[in-house]
Structures are given as structure tokens and as C-alpha cells.
Length: 268
Figure 1 (cartoon, rainbow, N blue to C red):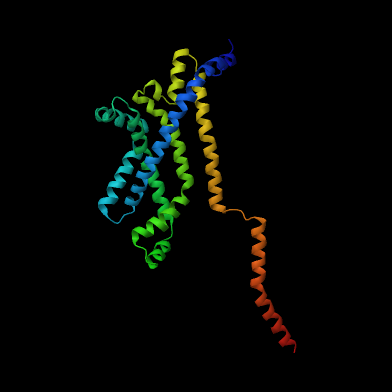
Figure 2 (tube, rainbow, N blue to C red; figure 1 turned 120 degrees about the vertical axis):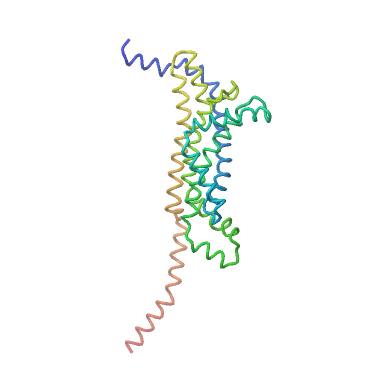
């Protein structure tokens, strides 16, 4: 067989793809989304706490947050998942039985929180100090000013980076297969791997990759669109442009009248 035919049969065997497709749709895709979304929500909550602690003036809050961030950003994701999934397995069996699925979500959440915490911290610190001073001058406490003024602006500025982290979580969810999930808990990558091992053909893995692309590519373009909207602002409609021109004309009338009056006096 020529090399092109070999490559085609290895990666584009439609029978292997059709055999794996139903399980990927009913089992793999839901589990991948559950892992990614759950980790994103828990990681965002913990990341916000880390961000606030990281900019705190209190040393016993600031230093533990920075050590946590350095540790979980420095460890490989696979090592963290194995450490959490295997190390906490006895405790997990006491709480929810022989089910490593929650431990996978916990591990992904801890990894995500370290990155999301740095994203939020950078966004909060990018807000001008005058914003906090103005809020304090209006009678807000420090906590109220942070919660109502500074943090909303900071999160808005780093929203594209936060969505990028969600994309990374979707891909990192494939590493949870290290924990030995049961058949009903397998995500896209594990299903593709199992079918490839059974058939000796890599087409199912390619199909899993196409599923990941279907999830991540639209999110990537959504991030770019959000970034453009945040930098450029909402485009004005024709009605808003007419209102602005009318308002500018009204504001210019007193000045024009004064100029005409001054010109008339000069002529006289």
C-alpha cells in the first residue's frame, strides 16, 4: 500500500468514526462539558479569593496566596491530577464511594484557580487608584469600594483572558482519564482512546480531536470579538449619531449668537 492510502485508512476510517460517534455524543461530550464548566466555576470563585488575598496589605493573607499560585502554576497538570486523585482517593471513598470523578473536578479547579487568580489580580490592579479614592470619598468602605467599583471593572478588563482559561480547561479535562473513570464517566479523549485501542485505528481519536476543535474554536473567536468590543466600545447607531449632532448644534447656538453679536458691535 502506498503511504497516502495508509494514512487515509489510519485516520479517516469512517466506519470507526461512526462506531464511536454515538458514545461520544451521549457520554463523552456531556462529561467533558461537566468537567470543564464545574472546574471553571469553582476555579473562578477560588481564583477571586486568591486575587483579593494576593493584593491584601496583610502579610498572612498575601504570602499564602502567592505560594499557592506558584505551586499550582509550577506543577504539571498531569502530576496535580494524579496527586489529588490518588492521594485523596481514601478520603473520597469515605465521602462519595469509589468514584474518582469529583476528585478530577477538584484537581482541575485547583489548577484553574491559580491561573484565574493571577488573571483577576492583574485586572484589579489595572484599575486606576483614583477610582478607589473616589469611591472612598463618596463614603464607601474599602470592602464596598472593592466589591462595587474596583472588582467589576477589573473583571471586565480581563474577560477575554478568563475565557481563554476556560478553553484551556476544556483541553485539560482530557487528563482526568489518568484516574481510571468508569465507562459512564469517560470524556471525549478516553472514549476515542478506547476505540482506537480496540480497533487498532486512530480515526476515533481524530474524531475526538474534531469535537475539541468544535468546542474551542468558536470560543476563541468569541474571545476575539469580546476583546474588540471592550477596546472599541459599542458602535453607535444612526439615531444616536443624529441625537449627538442635534445636541452639539444646540450647545453651539449660544456661542454662535455671542459671536454674531460681537461681530455686529465691531462693525458698528
